[in-house]
Length: 168
Image (cartoon, rainbow, N blue to C red; front, side, top):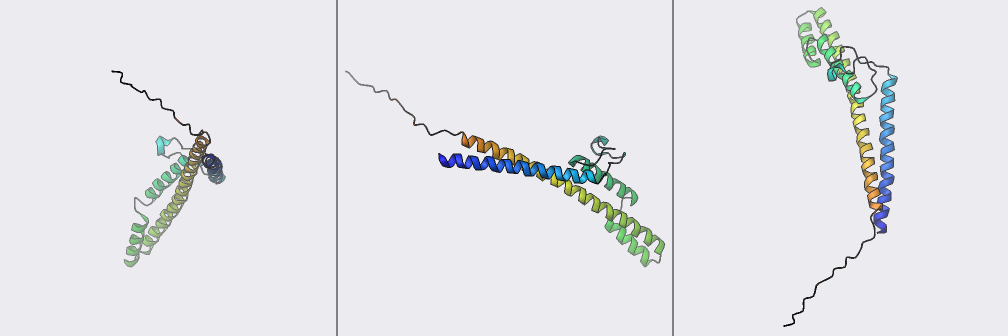
């Protein structure tokens, strides 16, 4: 019985630590994003444009920003990827059209920067998710620990048996 209560107390403490660590991480990521003073553009379409014009400070606004960055990069490159633009720049250079090669290279740089920005934003989205998971586990550990500390001493069950005597 003492072991059950000890494990319960340890679970409660672990739950509190996890809940605090998750909340601090969530808050830190949120404040770091907010410090960048990024605003989701008005033409953002994620979730019906619900985050358009809002500051990027949470997982959904970060995702909305990453989504619209991709949209803008694809519009700038006419739907061509970083790799495709590299092949086009090389082909133009080999054909002797350095002006076109330079245009493809400049567009490729834009697409590359967009990719880096999106990766950073997606990293923050993942960090928010992990922080929320840790907080959820903290609550679960705390509840399990609380339940374990409430387990009472085992009670011996008394079973009465009916004795039938044959009196014939």
